[in-house]
Amino acid sequence: MAHRIYSTSFGSVYPLYVTKAERKGRTKAEVDQAIRWLTGYSDEELAAAVADARTFEQFFARAPMMNPARETIRGTVCGVRVHEVEEPLMREIRYLDLLIDEIARGKAMEKVLRA
Image (tube, rainbow, N blue to C red; front, side, top):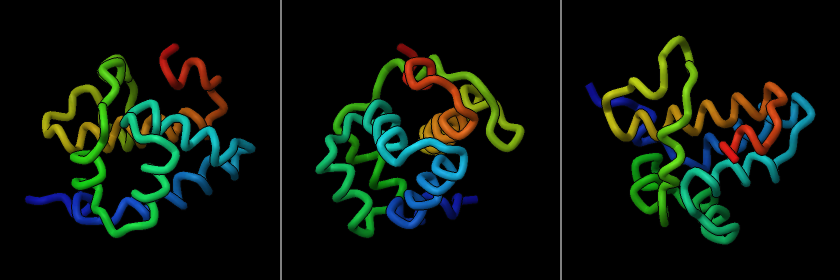
């Protein structure tokens, strides 16, 4: 079964990430920082990804450089351990979801970015 999130536009979900963080007193800049850390997108490239109709599949396929440290991300999203997700694209999406969750929970950015 193909996951519907793959064909969902990244730009339609991005505002939800920002809203989730801002509701908890965090900022859009912190969300952007985490996304840039994960994917290697520049500010301009990230803005373009939000503005165009690229899907999550295209968003990750076009990422300039996925951060190798992402493989150290551990935790669960919706009861699923992100590092155990077998399908590569879904694992990348879950890594991003977990980073946003950590920001929203108030985790220090140094820890979110595995610094």
